[in-house]
Image 1 (cartoon, rainbow, N blue to C red):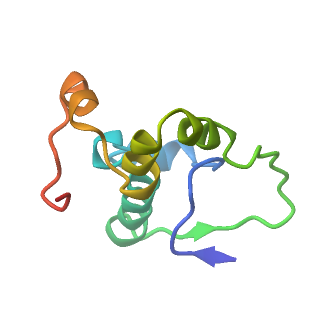
Image 2 (image 1 turned 120 degrees about the vertical axis):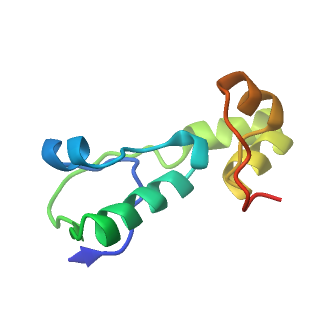
Length: 103
């Protein structure tokens, strides 16, 4: 089935596609934002398709690390999971600039 977006918790990307793309960029967002931007690049710039492969087996632990983050710090959870942003201190540590779309 052809998709417009796939969350990258488990994906297969052909080496030639990865090598010819700009790759994922965590600076764009901590959660799904960078995945969405990568999918848009693949579809609209490289003119390739993204597919769901029926019959592939993935064992996913259903956001276990996200739940631990939520238990430890609701504020950090909201920044990462809800707002899909880097907190200012961590962004500065990595040298990330705040995107113009983040208010």
